[in-house]
Image (cartoon, rainbow, N blue to C red):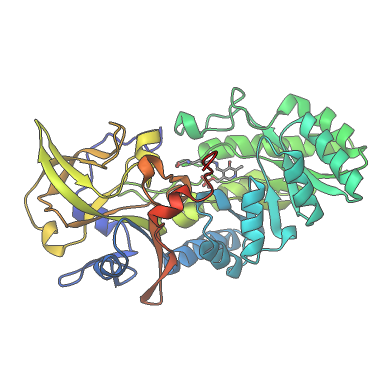
Length: 439
Ligand code: LLP
């Protein structure tokens, strides 16, 4: 189950730190992200606050791009907007040359707002509404990954009505176990995603005759937080087989979209290596002669972000608890997937102190509002700051205002400085848009 639900011996504070080159510990300033003291950010903008490292994101994009270059595999990278949809981050990846993978019209509009051209956007997802498809097609979306025969017909009808031709790929469900958490596996026959391989040839042929669509190729995505190349090798092998079978049947196949899913190291392991991934892709697609695309999210942004929080109080009720000012409404992953996130104190002295187990929780009235159970941590007094690590992906995007908790601020660290990129939500904004009948 990948290392999302990690139960092994836990890395200690120094091991967590050593495994993350983007973090550093300064004797005076404490924990830093890209050499910027987290204390300075919390002093200025308060906590909880999301902190993202721009250089880390650029470096990770470059590592992925370079891994494919080293294998001489031309790869078109479409950043999966769902992982972190902040305009500043979309803009950063746009500057690096990435396109975008979106799953709603909201994400599509965000991506275009950040400067990504509609033609560089791929639209995935199991249920796209007529209105969403209309907007995307009118704007000239680059590719739509269709997930059912019904959707192919819908796309063709809308495109024909608009007088455009939709470029589509058929998302094939390869029925491969990605070996990840059940809630984020997508390539099994029992999952709602994609089209069964057995149904692809007939649909491909039929779709090629429809007036509103041009069938460009095949798309796949088998899950997220995948730490081994094996499930990919298996799935992409099936994808390559499909491309060959379609061509033998006389179809033209130009595109193979490989999806995302590259896992990161939430403990002190390295995550899936881009080099190993790229080598596997080269082997699996050798001689296929298709345009290769991929849609990574977590790999690019996960390790670049953290959630900075403060200890509200310490409490002992049979167990030792540390209650933070951040909660499950901010970072939902531990409550939703029992996901493991590293927690580091910001104060340098705390790295030396005696450490004992503590449950790290938020103030929300649910027992699921727990960031860590029996985590070995030093004595952290009220006001002490902690960083919840690897929260750049599926962090802020999954947050809510549950318990009427305003959404946290966000800060971007770059070139040794930092800038506010999301203002902390004002409590009054919580009822913005609400209408009381008769009032
Ligand atoms: N492409 C498609 C079609 C997807 O459904 C996804 C993620 C991606 C690309 C990007 O996958 P990535 O490279 O980020 O693994 N909320 C969960 C993760 C859900 C992923 C859903 N699909 C979490 O917090 O772990």
